[in-house]
Length: 449
Image 1 (spheres, rainbow, N blue to C red):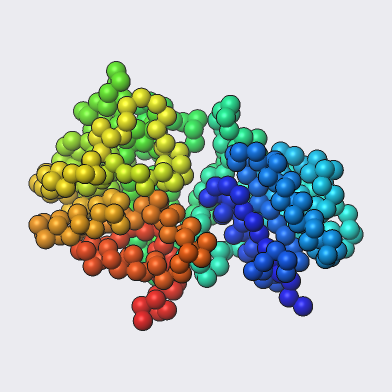
Image 2: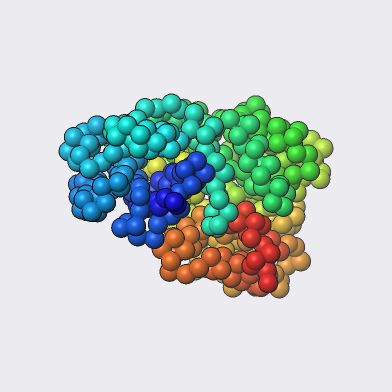
């Protein structure tokens, strides 16, 4: 008989990732199917979040509702996971005896075993330990039925901020191995994707105001690029050139005396570019919006015999409200001081994009980028008619999150993904950078008819 699973998720995108993996595990190992309602489930899972207001109260309120369902179905199992589970541990079962299983974010891979043990012995199961990256060795590849494929590179956090519980509930900051990332690259190639854009999430311990780690020719990104090109020499790698992931204040440029120093930043960017080109990057994508950076980087590339390295300029990068999820993901959210509005473009201004793109083309840009994408179709269209260079569009994290949330809540179907992507090509985009790439590749035959 098929077993039914219902998962309720509180909180951030990381919790969405964890919930997806819970289902993948239970589907693969226990043949669970998703239930449409709580009442028809054999296993109820609440994936909790400590950041929510009155988080604990909301958890126990939900358990109270589920207890009534369990009274009608004594065979029902209730599992509590996530950050509140990590904090409260066995206190959850003491306060709510209807709960059968408690597990933390780092032990979700043990969920099938915890479920089996509870089913066999009727002994409540609790595991909120921190086995670091062990779980990644047990997580199956995410299914292809939904337009998303999460790849978690770094877990945890080393910043013990007074307002945040992440280090206490998810553990210290640890990174996945290069081998794991290579496996993901291989899976992308298997479904027909041969160009990959890489963005770093740098350990907080090596960030500083001068972004020195960006200039380290043996940093994680340079090592990663070398390994990918060694294993997959025909894969095209696009590397972001900007200092914000390495900068302790989250800015794209180096701040001196309370201002972005354009010239000092250019010197750092050209050194960073050569390191990435030496490692094997095919396309360098300066996204910093510093004046003159394309010319400086192009000159430096030619000095070091990298004449064939392509420059993809973020020439029309607007100061947008759609960047939030990405900045959180790579740890580049601005922490203090001046605003990024001072060096990104005003979204009210269309003429500035013409000026910036012409300057970048004159300095040696091979491709220009419009970012974000969906709210800037008019920009893409006008630029395409004015300039004889490829125009790329970047469907950014906020656009992805907006569409994905609408799909998850059944406001619309998966077909909204190709509809938005086609609108970008229709406006004049030569190519689109999108987080939906893997899903589109896997479902191309179904959505192209």
